Length: 115
Image 1 (cartoon, helix red, strand yellow):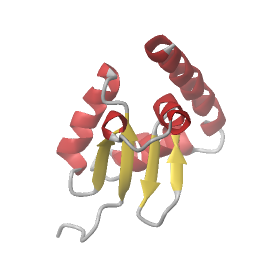
Image 2 (cartoon, one colour; image 1 turned 135 degrees about the vertical axis):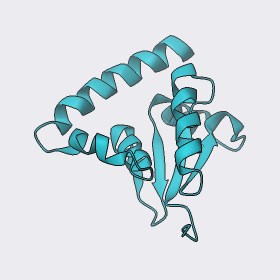
Image 3 (cartoon, one colour; image 1 turned 30 degrees about the horizontal axis):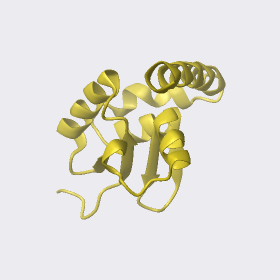
């Protein structure tokens, strides 16, 4: 049975080749569970909001929570049958390490693409 409403909205950088690959997979596996929104299609964003959204993944859950970075990624993938594979990324001992790695990667990716 399909859910009556999506579990959330994932905002992604549609101009990023790596991001686009992941989004294609998510679209195939969780299209009925997630709204996938290309940040570049949002004309009403301020320059500051656009910069913030392009600097890391943003996901707004159906209950209004805003998840960033790997929290957004793990939540999105939990909407698929493969979500259990990423659960370890949120383990308390691992989370600070992988979050620091993600922040470093996301910062470098943003600087390379938009600076």
